[in-house]
Image 1 (cartoon, helix red, strand yellow):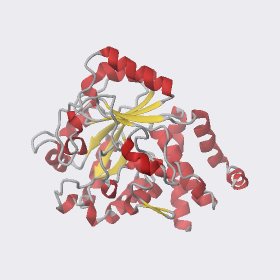
Image 2 (cartoon, helix red, strand yellow; image 1 turned 180 degrees about the vertical axis):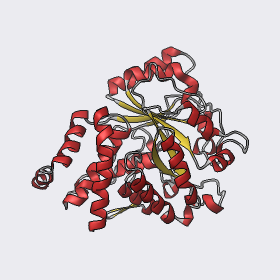
Image 3 (cartoon, helix red, strand yellow; image 1 turned 30 degrees about the horizontal axis):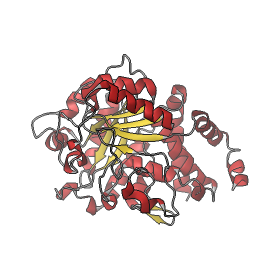
Image 4 (cartoon, helix red, strand yellow; image 1 turned 120 degrees about the horizontal axis):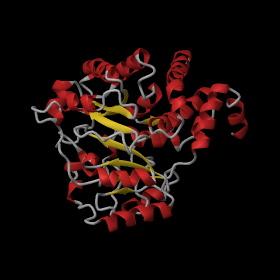
Length: 362
């Protein structure tokens, strides 16, 4: 296997990506709910449907500071901030920013200022065009998408985290074009209909048309799309070589939570460091998006990034397969600003070109 890796890295472009990842170092990550409060109540949001809002955050700063020290001592160096609305707690967000590398998900209603958060990757949620987004997230009244666009226009830290529904593929070009013209990049996610809204939002109908549109957006905007065709295929088919997506193969779950003891006994890869903390910063849940096993309806892009990344060895059979692994890993580092800014400007179109060439060749 090492001989094959050495062979593949003779390619200067692959070597450049691989070297960048190695320089950035190993990621020891956790996810936390910044708060149990939110200024929206989006339809189908797992945070409320799974009652994650019932966990009260630390009352005083001593407890919050103790959590920071605990995780630094444990070796944590990267935090994904979700839950509630992080922009409601800017002082605490700043403390985390000063101590860890971060990625934050926000609904965009409150702008996270540039001052003090200069290198913070910000994923701003959008669920469709203004009509769909207003219905799903703004209670039919508030144009959340428009507010977020205004708040983050030409913000170099920001990408729009576009959660696509299975029956809304006809909106994809409109939304992507709007984000690109606003000066932002786009990362796709996939809507899970856990509250049985049905119709266009029913993930059980599949994402075949959505995938075709994502590929078309990659070809139209290769310097703006942060998801590769390979990652999209893995997520929507739930297939990675001999593995089928589910609890037994998910790699990001709370390793300190007894609910996952049997999973850890299986001979499948997982992140031994990962924990998904509730807003109390004491208790953990099964994984970052669920308090119980809902893996069959999980299309979460971050979980699937991890699934691919931790299965490097499966991707060493051919140079094309290794390229799929390497570009996936690099995109994760890229999105989360763990590699140099100059590289972020230059490599993205080349990555998409390389993967498209390999796809057409095969």
